[in-house]
Every structure is written in C-alpha cells, then in structure tokens.
Amino acid sequence: MQFDQHISRQFNDDLEQIKTDMLEMGGVVARQVEDAVTALADADSELAEKVIRIEEEIDEREMTLDENCTLIIAKRQPAASDLRMVMSVIRTVHDLERIGDEAQKIAKLAIQLSQEGSAPRGYTEVRHIATAVRAMLNESLDAFTRFDAESALKTMAADEQVDQDYKSAIREMVTYMMEDPRSISRGINVLWALRSLERIGDHAKNICEQVVYLVRGTDIRHGNL
Amino acid sequence: MNSIATAVSMPETAVQEGTDVDHKIEYPATTVGAPFVDKAKLRMRGIDVFYGDKQAIHNVSLDIGQHEVVAMIGPSGCGKSTFLRCLNRMNDTIEGCRVSGDIQLDGEQINGASVDVVPLRARVGMVFQKPNPFPKTIYENVAYGPRIHGLASRRAELDEIVETSLTRAGLWNEVKDRLDQPGTGLSGGQQQRLCIARAIAVSPEVILMDEPCSALDPIATARIEELISELRENFTIAIVTHSMQQAARVSQRTAYFHLGNLVEVNDTERVFTNPEHALTEAYITGRFG
Image 1 (spheres, each protein chain N blue to C red):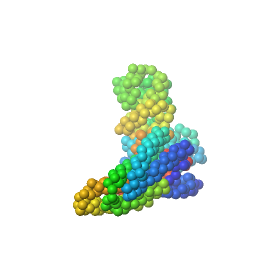
Image 2 (spheres, chains in turn blue, orange; image 1 turned 135 degrees about the vertical axis):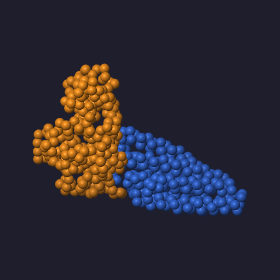
Image 3 (tube, rainbow over the protein chains, first blue to last red; image 1 turned 180 degrees about the vertical axis):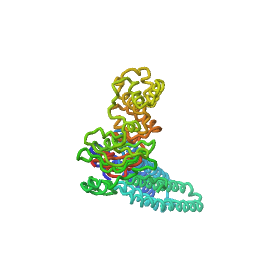
Image 4 (cartoon, each protein chain N blue to C red; image 1 turned 45 degrees about the horizontal axis):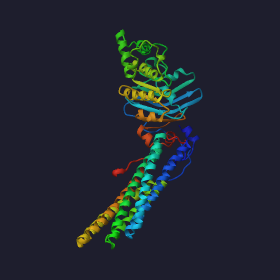
C-alpha cells in the first residue's frame, strides 16, 4: 500500500504523520507493559510509579491523534485506502490507550504487592502470559508498519493460546488460595494482573483486525473471518 | 479496451500487500465489478463513440436498474458525459459524432436511425450542468413540454402538472406567487430546480443529469441532492458528477470511466471504501494514476 502518491503532498504528509505518531504511541505503550510486568515481578515500586506517570502522556497522545484524524476527515474527506487508514488508526489508538490503562492497573497492583512483602505464588504464570501478550502486541504493530495482513492473522491466532493459559492460570491460583487462605488477598491481586494481561492480548488482537481491514478492506471483527 | 491495455503495460495493481510498486496501472480487460443488474431499465452493450476519427468511448457495457441512481465519475475527458448523452441520443446533435452499439430502454432498441428521438427524449429527460431555463415565465418553462407532447387537454390539467412538477422539484413554495415572472430571474439553484421540474413535467422514466450541481453553491447543491433521493422513488437516474462526495451520497452504484473505458462499476459503498480496481482507487483518493 502506498500513501505517498497523492497529488496533494500535504495529504501524503498528514497520513504519514498519523501513522508515525500511532506507531510511536505503540512503542511507548509496549514499553509500559514491559515495565509494569517487570515492576510486578521484581517488586519494584519505583518503576511502577514511573509507569503510572507515563500513562498521562499516553492519554495525551490519544487525544492528539484523535484530533489529527478528525482534521483529516474534515479537510480531505478521505476515501478507499485513505479512509481505511484513518479509521484503522483511530481504532488502533483506542486499543493502545486501553492497553496503557491495563499497564497502569498492573503497575498499581505491583505497588500493592510490593508493600505486602514476599513474592506470592502465581508469578510464573504472570511472566508466561506477559511474554506471550507482549509478543502479540509487538507483532501487531509490526504488521501495521508493514501492511502485512498475513502476519496479522497469524498473530491473532496466538490469542487463543493466551486465553487458554489464562484459564489454567486462574485454576492454579484458585488451588493456591484454597491451600492457603491467608494468601487470598494477594492471590486476588495476582488474578487482577493476569486479567489485565489477558485483556492486553485481546487489544493486540483488535489491532491485528485493523491491519486486515486496512490492507484488505474486510471487517473481520467479532469472528467474521 | 484492449487497444489501450497494450499501450499501458505496467504491474497489475497499485495496492499490493507489503510491497512498493510502480504507480502506473494497467487497464482491466473488461469492466470489473457489477456492471449488470437483473432488471435493467437501460441496457447498454458494446457502445463505441467516435468524434470523427477519434474514439471517445471504447466498448462500454452497462445496465441501469429501475429506480436506481447510477453515478458516473472520472477525470475530465474520460467520456462520462459523452456516454450519458448516448442514452437519449443527444450525441445526434453533434456534427461528426457516431454512436454504435446496443442501447435498450425497457428492451426496446433506441440507438437506431428509425427511432424517433422526440418521444424518446420525453421518456429520457436531461438536466444540464448550467441551468438553462427558457426565456419564458416560470409557468411556461414547466408547461411547455406537457403542452407540445399533448399531455394536458385543459388549462386546469396543465395547471396541475405545473404544480405537481414544481412541488416534486421542491420549488413550488418558493415560486407559487410569481409563476408569471421570468424563469431567468430565479437564483442559480432555483433555476436548476426549475429545469428539473421542466424535465419531470413530461413524466419521463429516466432522468439524465450532467453535473447538475457544478454551478451551484453548497446549499443549493444539498437541495438538489435531497431531491435526487426523492425522485428516485419514481424515476431512474444517471448522474455525471465531478464531486466524488456527491456520487457517494446520492447513488447506489458508481461507474468509473477513464480515457473512454469503463474501468469499474460497483456498489457505491464498495467503491468508496474498498474499490476493486487500482485505477478507481487512484482516482477517488486523489493519487497519480
């Protein structure tokens, strides 16, 4: 796909800009997820605080991008691939912002858990799922960069494994909590973190759906493959 | 179309996944998309149009369905207006213009030397780019057609046709108190609606519109577009427009012409969100094609 062939060079630049800004936002969000998970695993409340601070910056990026997309629609009335580009950027930015929220939630849990002392059980599962969803997020952004619908579809398929791992992690956690009722409060926090990671996987999947929409023009959301 | 296809031989599409390609695009061997419908009001097959030696339309085939609005878009000189003018034999008036091919209105051949164009043009009316009311009163502008076609036997009948036509054209309330004033005294948008009223006064089945809003301001344009949607209930409409947004708003199908070839015809929604051919894509997104 080419977005540098318009008769209006300004239009080329505008479209390039929203794509670049979105991918940059994606980079910041991916880093947030990584830091939040590290903060949780290492009980690093300082790093967690940083994640919470940066979340505000992500919200600002979302608003700026929304504004710029709105302006393109108002000024250019984009059609066909240009329209799909603007729509998919708007939707992807929304998903990225939500991923940022989930990272912030994990960071808050990291602070709580670090205050409660020793590392609770369930961290192995958290690490395992975190690795999988971070890969999904990075691959989805890569697929967007390269307009690669095929690899987006492959990445989407990985979400099923994440969902399965999430379910079995929950079962593990329930077992731990039944074995040691004193761990329930911490266990619930770990469950919340797992839940956030699973949601991040869902959002990464949404981004992949937008890549397919952008490249092929087909809406595959809600299982319409 | 093949003659052109050989002249422009470049990669198949401009939109390929993940790769950069040259932006020159090849013609399709035949029109892509859905040029034909089940119940065609107008059926055109293999239309060629020549101005002298110069071929302006190359082997175009297209159906226009009953109560359908078909928009024809394309760059200047692409042949869309020439094609539109084939549908009521307006090209007959141009010296050296030759139209060949099969054009049927309700299954009846209309592209023959034996066809009387006067009743044909009553069945297939036309609205032009520039409003062109007759230098007569508002009343006479609308009454003229029905009178010469003998559609009214009494004055009261004629009055009724004039009122109905002006009402359908959304102009009645604005002019009912000054029907005896000259049509040329109206504003541009009103004049164009007067021309539409004049076209529908003879109860045509098809209305051809050749850039009907290009001389109008956005408000007058919006009125005409609204009118097109209403007229669709009773008429079949083919509209040539330079405004892509207008095509997107008023039509059910869109036909893209390029250098006398009909490149693509598809549902309008499809054309503006995910066109099938790269030439269509290049045109509607304002790219070099």
